[in-house]
Length: 217
Image (cartoon, rainbow, N blue to C red):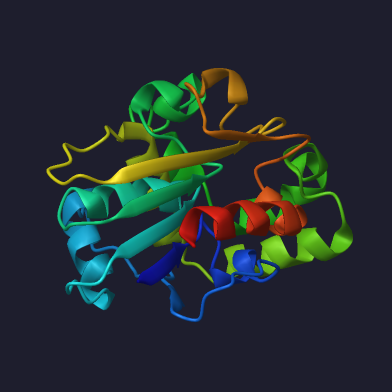
C-alpha cells in the first residue's frame, strides 16, 4: 500500500507536519508549475507522473484543492481510496463566489503578495488564529508563484467532477466551521470535525490523525 498526500491551494507539505500516520510508505506531492492555459486534466497527468501505478493499493489524501486533484487522478488511473480533508466532491459543494472568479476574470487579481499583506484581516476567521500559523501560511503561499496561484483559482472556479472509470472509494472529512467550503454545502460528509476549520489538518492534527489511521490501516 502506498499513501500520497496532496496539500491545498497555495500550501505545501508543511500543512501535514503535525499528522501522526502509523505507516511508513507515504509521500508528499507538492505542486508543480502549470503551463500557460493548461487544462486541469493535462496538469494532472504531469502531476501524477511521480506516482508509480503498479499492483499495490494506492490511497490519496487531498486537502482542499488537493482533494480535487486527487479525484482528477482517479479518473486517469486506478486509485483504491481517496480521503478528502476540507475539500469538495462535486461542483455543487463549491461556494458561488468561487464559481464567479473565472467568468469575471477575478482570479487574475489574486497574488501571493496580497494574501500575505491581508492575512491579519481574514486569517483568524478562517482558522489561522495564532501568529505561528499565520507565519506558516504566509511562508507556504510565498513559496508558490502567482502564475500557479491564479491558475489554480481558475481551475477551482470552473471545476466539474471528472468521470471516474475505476472503483475508487471516497471518504470525506469536513470541519464544522470551514469558511472556505462551508459545511452547509457539503452533501453527507463521512465525518464532521467539531469546531474544525479549513486548516484543521494542522491545528486539529491529533483528531485527524486518529481518523486517517483508522481508515488507512
